[in-house]
Picture (tube, chains in turn blue, purple):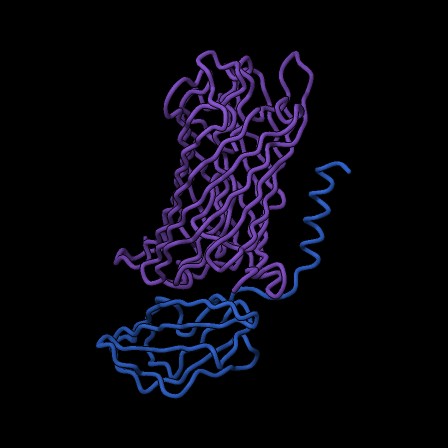
Amino acid sequence: MNPVRTIALAAGFALLAAPAFAHAFLKTASPAVGSTVSQAPSQVMINFTEGVEPQFSTITVHNAQGQPVQTGKPHLVGGDTHLAVALKPLTPGTYTVDWHATARDTHKTQGTFHFTVASK
Amino acid sequence: MRNTLPAVTLACAGLAALTAVPADAHVVVGNRVFPVTLTFDDPGVGDEATLPQFVYPPTSGGQNLYQFEWEYDKTITPTTAVIYNQGWDILQQQGMKTHTGLENAVLTGKWQGITLPRSETVVSLGVMEEFAGSAATQSIGGDETGATLPTFYFGQGLGPLPIGLLRPLAITGELSYSIPNHRLNSTGDNGGQPFFWAGGLSLQYSIPYLQSQVKNIGLPDFFGRMIPLVELDWFSPAAGPAPGLPETLTAAPGVIYMGDTYQVGLEALIPANSAAGHHIGVIMQVHFFFDDLFPNTLGKPLFQ
């Protein structure tokens, strides 16, 4: 068979055979990555590109002094792509969100971002 | 592997530095995803495949070379892999018959020795082995004899630095030293190869990193998956005679689109010195991540 045709067929097969698994990366977050919000949020929610396993995924939130401000464990909201954790009442300042996600195919990913609660 | 043309053709070649260091692999290190660079290898190991890569390299002297290439990366353990590269080429030369043939096969053994997630650092070592092919391979510029290339790879993200919107930047690189199985003589007509250095360097700006780690600027999903980058490829004879094989430097600006289970890259190939060619070329690559596509079969190491 023509090598070019072989390559094209193989590529097509690979695409058709692709199941819906991949690394879970942050798609969007609330509060948004790097944002400044006027109202203190009651939770941090991350929307991942793939479904995650909540038992093996974490979200921790720290204030500028390094103290944790999340309460309880992260939990799914709606489908398995939205992971949220509740927060204590926040005062104005900058907060750091660290997340570790385990996707359904067991791949692990992680990330860090900040958001700021503005002074009133 | 470098497609060295026979001595007569080499005088006007300028081909090939681009294929000096084949093999690709994407790697996740802490918050950083290093994508597959197009003209040289990435710093890590993975289960994946390039299928296909098309290269129209800069050439001179009335030549046109079209390369259809492929690659398969298989992890043996989580930090070691074996990589296979090859391609099928069409070489057109003014006033001469068009030649086609398989490129020389290249096997690479690679060890991802240092992985530092917090500092977004990865360092690997590898050894590439080029296997000499048939007469058809030589007719499209393939080496008549093989070579062994000890190779160093690195990747460094700038995310940990306090540099604001420049944190999505990353640098990756590769440096190989080629030890020929049969050394080229001073007249360049004994079918040998010279000792040579081949290197690659990339500067990348990850929009996904910007959107997910630094500041979500509200880009649509399509643009939020782009990684603009510039790759530089360098080839230089190292010691002894290398007639017809001058030092070459090529710049490759372009962009990579990161899908969930694949990536697509497109770069221009711009000769940075006259020996690297006399026109702008192009490289396009489709690359699949088998660790995502087939996590329980082809996509995991043979030994965990």
